[in-house]
Image (cartoon, rainbow, N blue to C red; front, side, top):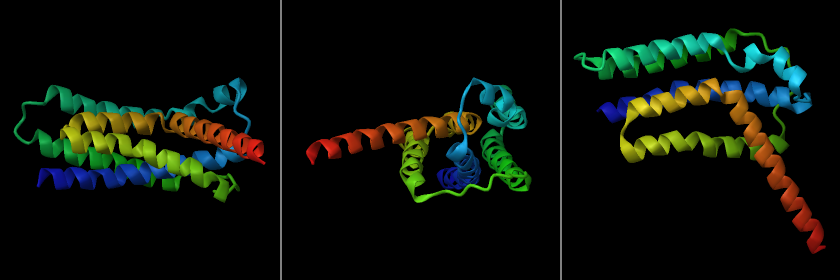
Length: 168
């Protein structure tokens, strides 16, 4: 039964991560990322409200690990934190008029593969607390993960185009 609830907790995290990734993909569509942009948007990239919530989870997981209901507390706390963060992102203003385009689909597929890594880790090991830590790290570094996925996608597209142009 615990495994079922742990799988359910992945849903709010997935919704939150997808919302962040979608918003950042829109930003990447027309923005040149450089050192100046990074300085200006540092607090957008690394959100300290989420960092505080993650720290609360880690506090309970580390210092109350011998409590009777700590498994239930960790599962509920993880879900509540991610549900709160997801709803919070829906209320934020996103003035970006860009949309996800069909050329972003390959980047989204790479992101989905990256998202599967912690889920597969949980399926293989059953260690939900470590999986939660990994998922929190994914959430905190989501913009960097999206940028990395975009770079990988662009590299793959470049290699495929070069190969196709060489075969003609």
